[in-house]
Length: 123
Image 1 (cartoon, rainbow, N blue to C red):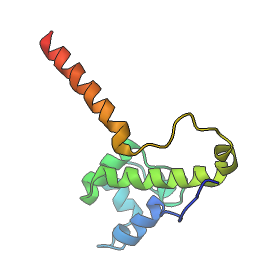
Image 2 (image 1 turned 180 degrees about the vertical axis):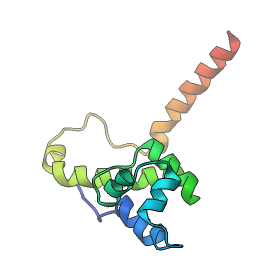
Image 3 (image 1 turned 30 degrees about the vertical axis):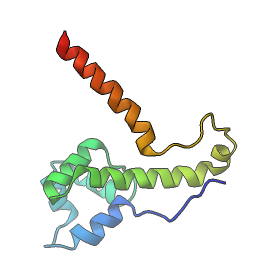
């Protein structure tokens, strides 16, 4: 059975816990700083909007963080929800390959991309 694991925080939880309590940062002020509507920030804070790559870049710039920080929070949350909602369906799938480590998967791509880069430089 697919392990759902611990429940990761939502982006809004992280924003509330770490940023909105600082220096009287309100949703209005955050929206203005991000260059988005208050409605967008409100939806994000009420779990009705997910972090997109542009929003991750905005949050990182305004809050002095890394965009990967925000994207990773969203991805972990999305994977958690998908596991919870689709565990039986996923467990019923028959693997075509044995599970591989990230390094085992990435290595062939690095080799492939290096050779493509060399070919482009040569032409």
